[in-house]
Length: 208
Image 1 (cartoon, rainbow, N blue to C red):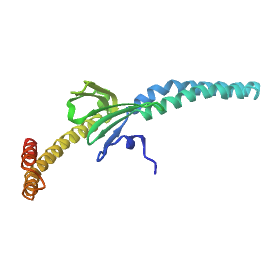
Image 2: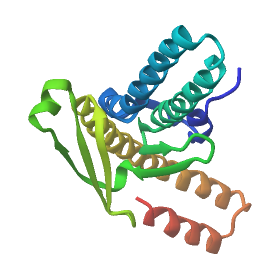
Image 3: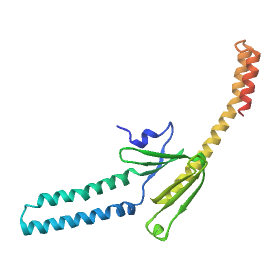
Image 4: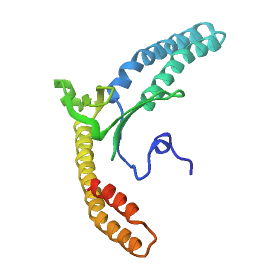
């Protein structure tokens, strides 16, 4: 089974926690004009055909294709603009054919600001502003659907990442004495010289 574009971007042991898009209102606001124009053209075509016959049917059909094509493009643009939370980072993807990808490592996320207007709370959309320590500085996601869920998923992933990092560091620290003991055995067997043992021991102790 072919992997999706998102799955191809994931690193080893990285998994997707949440995928969302801009609220449906954003899509509707971008295609409402095309819907109105399409309905008007269809209505005029029907009236014209009923009065003059079928001669202008082809022209009416061609005129209808123009707003439909624009509407299709807007729908594809909305659908391809995704906001993703993984267990390691936050990713923003846009573009139908040419892809524009911006991601922020959860380790570098300093703060998350959510803004919801009255209508945003009523219809469940809002802006998420991510402040990071990276070169991007600020990453703004405008009018995304269910922003509370998005913010919660991101903060939970960041907190869990901290615990996982602490656990891995602890395991590494616990394994260092065992590695030194193994080196000492190699030294006693003459496989490792005293100088090599001391140098490696110093290096390992520095990592604790």
